Amino acid sequence: MDVFQAAMAFAVVMIMSSTAVTGLTETYLRITAKRARVLAATVLRFLKEDRVLQAAVEDVSLLADAKLAKVRDRLTENPAGGAPIGENGSFLNRLRGMVAWNHGAERVDKLSTYAFLQRLATTDLGREIAETANESILRGLTMGFERYVAASNELFRKQAQAIAMVVSIIFAFAMNIDAVRLFNYLFEEREISGAISGEFEEAARLDEATRSAFQRVLDVLEIDAEVELTDEQRAMISERLMATEENLRRLSTEFDLPIGHSYFPYGKSGVPNDADIGDYASWAAKVLLAGFLIGLGGPFWYKVFSSLSHITQLLRTMGDGQVRDEAVQKKDGTQPASQELVDAVSTDPGKSRELMRLFRVFAGLDAEKPA
Image (cartoon, rainbow, N blue to C red; front, top):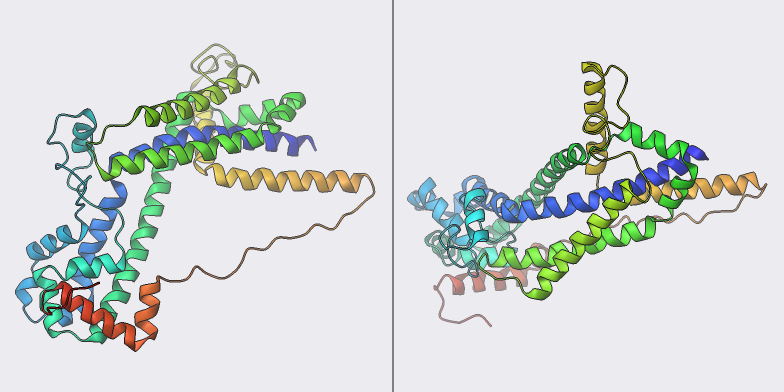
């Protein structure tokens, strides 16, 4: 039971730490326009590699790399992006100019299939396709683009996870979080472990609130790099950061956890006798482990805490000589529905013809204007 209690307390500490890492990671991803860069690269790869598109274009000069790059720019440009990054004098814009290189606020980070077709139709490449293509080709373009976007989302997810892991490791070294030292302390100090476990609901609430606050504000900054934050938005960020700082402060003061700069190797507490290179290497390995565990994220540790809590309750119940049936909740195995547009054009010939008609209208080949 003591091991489970210590593990539950350890999970709460990981949730609190991941809250701070979440804010740092989200800010980095938005400032560097990571998703927009991945999408732009995916769109260009689609234009160069999709066989349906290549076969639908008779004028091969339109498939030159330079022209496809211009089509990529048209497909991913952000009309609300303001001035190109780095051109005005605001601190945020200069910062974006330094780190976002050629894919910043002037690019969108999401592109629906309908928006893709609408924008493509306004390019020379799109007009060429509209003049020669049929419904089958347009349907193939639609399905192909969906596949590439799905790959783009997966690529971004993996890159974001890798970045979060790096930030977590840096955070662990900065805060001097030794995973083994921390767990041993929680295992030995039962009262403190129990008190920290009682903080689970508050830690989970703060983590969710912090994620939501950063998401709302950074969504605004992503749309327009020149926008000025309102006093309310600044207060919201400050409140979330202060709450996170308070939780981290309580880890090392109120709960007297063995983390921070007062402990080995930054401070004198817990310094081994005659510390040598082996002690420093051992510390580095254990802090590296802590960074990896923090990088698993708040949602992972929610599940760990819940699972340990259920196990603890079950053991207590068995210890009383009573066994209660637990209702097992199963997730719905169905997958989310595909985009309505993709489903429609792949199953309904009428929808395919209507999509072809709209594509020709957007390309300026038909006089009728879309509704």
